[in-house]
Image (tube, rainbow, N blue to C red):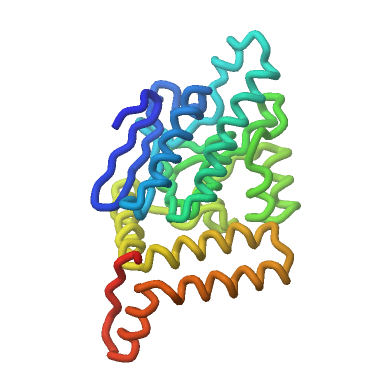
Length: 260
């Protein structure tokens, strides 16, 4: 289905969302942010979708914000306010979605594109992809991304990447823990496919609960988080998948999960 600036395809419980502005490296326009939010809401609410992939059309994943649209805006402060809020909605939708979201990255992930990428749950990047926080080079305070980057790499390394706007490679991104996997370009789909198949073999409800716990661990205090873990463990113990896993363990066979 085509939303103008975003394309979404579904197949076998997998939704593939493609940023579709290849003529400008899929840079975030206001329309792209709004279209993407609608798509993420729809995919997140669809019980038949178990795994979500996010890609970029053409030569890049996402080159950042649309500088030409910024330049054309009569009230640039208000435009940046609107654009960042549109991107933030997308980030929140990804984080609150109880299903894994995998970013499949190539070419460049710059500025808002990098920020959006690191909001995803797993990231597979083609070797040779270039990364940069980039906001500073445009005279902008970061409109998104500082929440995640400092937690991923630590405060001082985050200062280096954000304040100096230093470009870095796939190998460095992997070493820093910013991405999960580096694949050769002609092997990218194969690496992603193996991840997808692994998720499809796992108990969907437990995966969703685990993702929620990981996200909320970023802001919960220890006592409240332990209580939430206990509640979710008890909740998951009421699922068919838990009963199947226990029975399979006793019978010494692989479990067959149904996502219920």
